[in-house]
Amino acid sequence: MKLRLRCRRLGKLMIVSTVAAAIANFGRRITMAQAPIKVPNLTPQTSDTLSVKLRVNGTAHTLQIEPRVTLLDALREYIGLTGSKKGCDHGQCGACTVLADGRRINSCLSLAVMYDDAEITTIEGLARGDELHPVQAAFIKHDGFQCGYCTPGQIMSAVALLKEGCPTSDEGIRECMSGNICRCGAYPGIVAAVQECRASQA
Image (cartoon, rainbow, N blue to C red; front, side):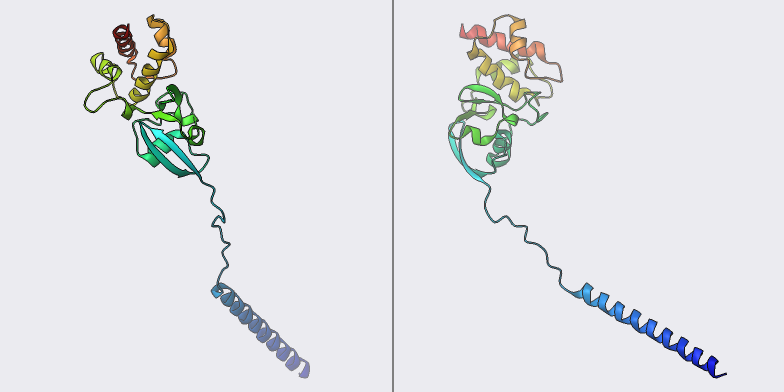
């Protein structure tokens, strides 16, 4: 009889101890949950930007940009000239073509810092007020575009082509313009526009 009483008392003590331990552990968890969490400071301690001066269409722009910013993004996102289009972003379609010191380049593959103090010409810089550039006028006359997305790059390439001494045949023009893709297939009008401008320069 005494043994049974002792066993019961021992069982009760074990239950009470277990419950007390569980309550204490729960209390510790609540305290930990309420404790403030230390978040590491992820703010960069030093600036990773560079000052770059771009002369675009005759106007100087001083930009504070990261070294990885492309010329295309600098023109579109920082200066606000959205005429140069972002097509493939891999230098394959030519929609982003601009002139750098008179030479045509794919601005999506060019870092802006590479053209510090260079003279950049975009599609916005060709016209003189209400007077279109001859290449722009010829593209309109010969329907050298349909949707128009590739047209700024096509026109910039054509302007440069006329100064590069490209072959005068239609095949030669197609070869010299092969870096610019028109998914609408307006190539006959593009070639005709270039030929007209070439003839007027002769």
